[in-house]
Image 1: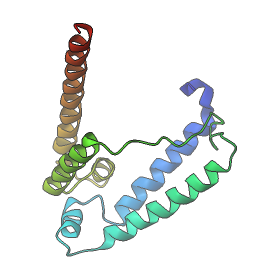
Image 2: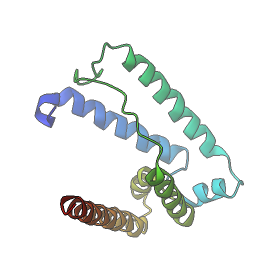
Image 3: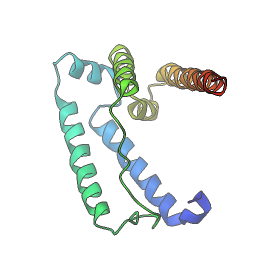
Length: 154
């Protein structure tokens, strides 16, 4: 379903969700890397409540969405749970993400909210996230090309 088909109502709900997310991150101080680093060092467990709140909301939404007869609640598009296999990429990607999170004290959502609370040096980390994601995309594309060449030659 294209953005035009989703309509203004859908976009307003997305904006509202973003506003709530950013406000909550700022209110809970999770937009401050030092607070996240304190959590990762077992000194401040506030992030557990943030994650727990997110898990309760997500679980509730998924439970309700599964009862909607295969239609997404906001868009009416076909809905189905996407099951991802637990493979090497999940493990390696999780370790790399965790290392970046532990070194910087930020994750992507909190980084953007951090700019909103005036932490402008965080833009350097956001730039790093973009470069890292871009490099991973290049690596994946080259890997797919080499795999395709190897298979077509057989």
